[in-house]
Length: 356
Image (cartoon, rainbow, N blue to C red; front, side, top):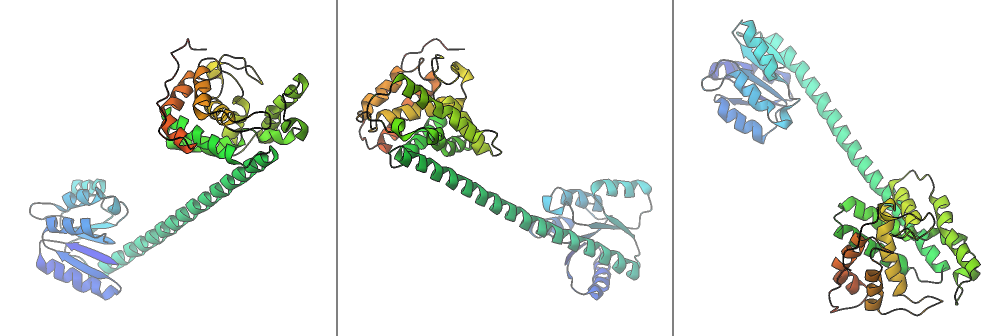
């Protein structure tokens, strides 16, 4: 344990050092100049500080106040030695942060007993702080591990749905990345953007409950078949209902909202404008663009520029205009991700009247 002694009297420092050396297991540094002592304390965290009250330039109370401004000295015990009997000085020292007092001339036995007790307290505090730090690290590692497992399960489930839908799983990856880019362009923080990125792959999780004959039908769906296909939203909502994790709750909002339309003509609830969860509005743009530009059993892939123009044309009717504008701002990155280089800028549609 490291002890700092601060006193302008070399004889007092010698006496203190001689007495405390008998404790064993301590390293002692002595300072005649309190300013020099404060510099040393700023570089080294001592386990105990013993400081005289009456010194030139700085009093013991000045030194205590200065030490307590260091975060590292918040719990370090400080003993003030004084020949003063003035009660006001003792109260001022306590208010400054003094832990103990010793009267001059000090009693060697009393000094060693008090220092031994204070060092034991300091040792216990240090041990508790060390255990708390280790526990915090362990909790952080465990939380990170749980989050990684949650993310892995979501991605594997999303890819399984895509394979059942007759695709390789690239659709969910692209929708997730485009959704993240749109969220970033809208100005959302990094945590929100990551949640959208991780939850977007589950946007069509409800398709697991749709018959293969409808899901993979090469031609146009009948009215009854289309009504059955729409049920994938309700199925997805039931799968993700009452999720305990933030990620599952975000995914549930995406499932519920990504087929709604800005003008209220979407499904399943006919929500309009800002009543549609923002996560659903973001993924709606990404999902439609990626679906249009990909081959499906019922259609050929559209050229990327044509698919993007369709998204822009849907601004204010199908899509949230702000999400479309964000899509346009991120168009160079989106086009590059989809394999299109040297693409011209994509201009958003003219402003339309906001939907309440």
